[in-house]
Amino acid sequence: MQGGAQETLMSLLPIVFFIAIFYLLLIRPANVKRKKHQEMIDALAKGDKIITTGGLICEIVKPEKTFFSIRLNDDTIVKLSREFIAYKLDENDEAKD
Image (cartoon, rainbow, N blue to C red; front, side):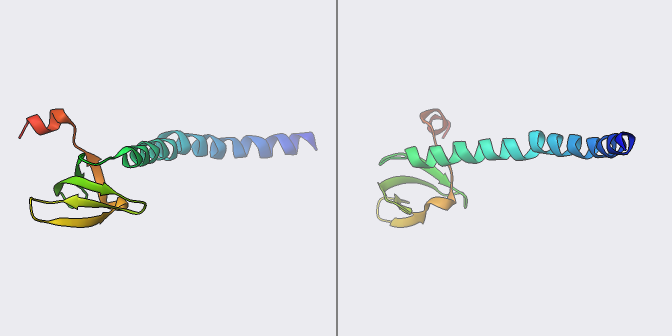
């Protein structure tokens, strides 16, 4: 009986190993990246410059609960959902323009 249980355990070992590798290489890094992106979005404030997922460079006028009011140019202010913010521009990024 004990030999059968040991064989079953040994046959499941490669599957457990691949699940662990899959978690360490794919799932965990994606969760860390998502968490950092959410922290960046939560920290955005008035005056910050952002790039949207559509590639627009704009300035935040007013952060709200589910969206941001953003300025596209001097005359145009629109609302943007938080889900469409790719990343925040740093002062170093702006100097390249």
